[in-house]
Image (cartoon, rainbow, N blue to C red):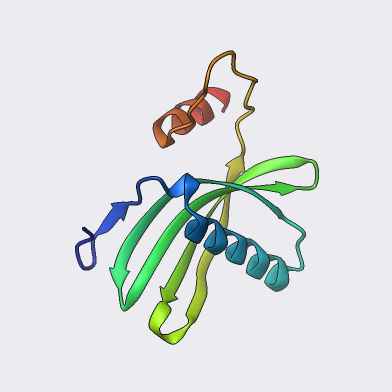
Amino acid sequence: MAMIGGISQVEGSQDSATIDRLAHFAVDEHNKKENAVLEFVKVVNVKQQVVSGMLYYITLEAKDGEKNKVYETKVWVKPWLDFKEIQEFKLIGDAPYAAPCEYDCILTPKVLALSMHKIN
């Protein structure tokens, strides 16, 4: 359970239709505001903070031209008012190259951080 004002990890966020919709919304709004053409690829990580509504901290991957990049966005949601607003949308860096796996691969936030550190 989320503590008021505290930021907590959202488990299973990569498979959540609600989080995907918020990530798509963030990319679409960014594209409108910045006259950009990013294409949403996937959600990498999500945290949430209880405020007057919910503030979602979404790390996502989006295609910028031919290159996949990682972005962080903050989406403020007040469902009882049908309200969604992008508080921030910023580039983190290039997405790590994901080589095909011989086995089932799971890219956890820790593995992502390690792989990004190793690439840089």
